[in-house]
Image (cartoon, rainbow, N blue to C red):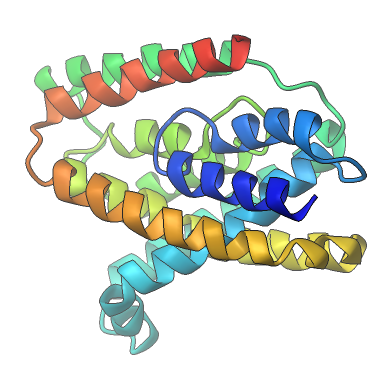
Length: 244
């Protein structure tokens, strides 16, 4: 069973950064590969590996936040985290044993494609930290639903602002850290047997670091239209893969 868990870690590390629901893909894959674990729990547990990748890759930003040198970023993370917990925790207790769906991925794909129109028409939310944090945090909380991509949901919310693609991705990835660390602690306490899958966190981290590096490098060269077009189409691709 260990080699199956390692494979799931690789899948998590690759798909976490794209709006194709890594949670949904890992949960579906675990139904065929691993016995004795709740698929949603496995998917959430493996997020810990990609969280380590976020901490390492954006280490300079985290150090500045810890030293209180980035008050706006700190404020964004605090508000987004609180909103995510308020929405996500009750929802998780309801859908923990739910069947993974794909319709939400399709909706998110259309949403991301529409953001290019918002941006072109100057209908943006601006860069007001509190407003963006509430919207992105709400969408992140909703993303505990299998089939709704956390990355896709938060990228969609942040794309309603006038931020650049690379900044949108950075905020989307960084805001996941507090929530995932908290949810992982809760999972391990409620289901200690998950700790036996710790080697899969290594493959999740390694694959996550490599993929994150590529995604961030490419995003710096993308204009907003190409960014939303590509990520919107990836949502549809994710839905197609999950159907298969």
